[in-house]
Length: 73
Image 1 (cartoon, rainbow, N blue to C red):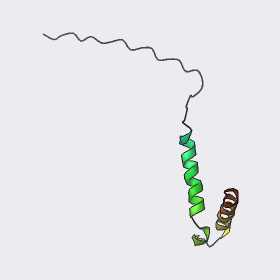
Image 2: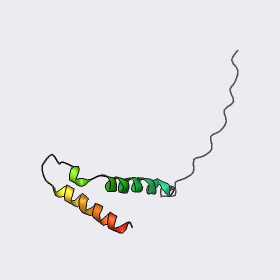
Image 3: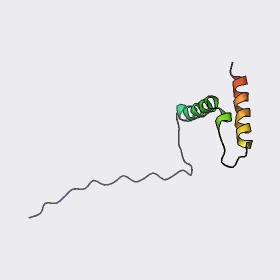
Image 4: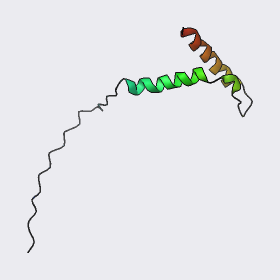
């Protein structure tokens, strides 16, 4: 003879209010930004060799690095 199983009723899902509520901690945005800036300061754009031979990207990165080093005492 099989026994009856008792199931609990599932609660009703809340109705969406129309927006997504995502909250990130402050460090979730600060740490990647800090890592990006650190890599810009450490890497030397003069050592980078582009496959196409166009030095435009190296000049842009070098100017950003000069700007950042001028801002940081």
